[in-house]
Image (cartoon, rainbow over all chains, first blue to last red; front, top):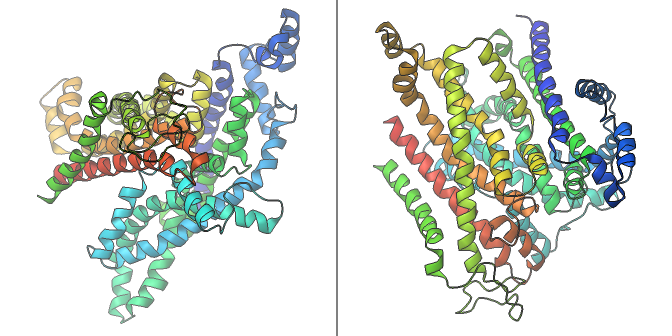
Length: 313
Length: 265
């Protein structure tokens, strides 16, 4: 199989998933008891007005036409308008995107800074004390509630030492960077146990492989082997592990944004829930799912480009 | 021997919390929802071991009663997905074909949604409450069991004991239930231990966001949220409920690791 065939096959696999996602997100709003018109009109609801609103929202048309309409609009980045302030949902999400993206990339960066050295340390001497200590991290780390980690960070860094702002996003770019540090660290603390666990395993596999044995027999020093041969492969492994966990990562940002009062897309969704602003909830859910699918696609394609064995399988 | 120690340590820790939750009324004589507005935000005293919260409720009492809610929902929310997932994994792995392809596409779709986003959206539909949480977690959770069991069935199908069972002419249902299931279910059981942790984390997060168990019921997530404004003076109100989750997670990890070591022998 050539790389192009692989790409084609991978794109084809996308279709049923995108169909499933769109169907679910479309059904989401229809499962909610009561009429959206009642939410929009509140106490002013009269049968005539409800009828007008239903016509505006297209709810009086057959369900399959509504679905096709929904998909057609979604392809044109049209996700409806917010019930609350009548702004287009796509525009609202786009406005909140920079904060979420900064938080995501900061979290990924910091978690690699934490996880990579620890994984290398653990794998370099299997079964030693340092290996066992690193292996204990996931056991404790995976049971920590996201909100709790956030509050502990606020408690120790923000309030006791007063180094970083404990909430908000600031107005200028340097302020953004400073505000995003603690939330990113929070994400890193949640993500690195998962990374450490998978990276340690793939590191051990790399160390056991033939090319490392060859390198050793050629008399290359252990340090050089670790940093040149192992690290390079470990970074490829990290990309795959991050891709697999992107859904978990995105889900965590929703909660972390809330704890640190970051105006990201996750906060947008949670605020919309209390106001029962259906189009926003629907739009953000669709947006996040599509992001996850796309990131998975990109990870797979990059992985296959870097490691030809994937394509052959 | 070492695996037994891990297992017993985990069971011991979790067992202590479970016993405290069951016999909560014997350990503390306070009511978890009873307010005492004359004594709000008090520090630890002989009467209130962990002080009181902003409504004068005893924090220690609320933590113990919170264990009741969080552990019960946490375990409930894993039972249903376990049964559904294991069943579907067995069937899809064994028969393959169109049904397998169909279920796998559903699996792909569910995986595409970030868990918390999906859970929040589902709780939004069904309205906050215990039932919604269990339904939301179940709708997402079965996928992991299905994939684990399906992968194990695919491996087991090629093994001699299965061929032998087919050749002796046993009915398919009997092969699946008596021969295949015991061999493929162990990994799912081990996973269910960490899955309970995940579902407790989800309950706590939803509680924090105000989408979980309705207040004033004592629940760890809403306790963390209620204590957050007082984090500087009364840090324990938010800290200790979260720490309880960490202990529960730790003990379940130990149980899981102990089970792995036992099963591998």
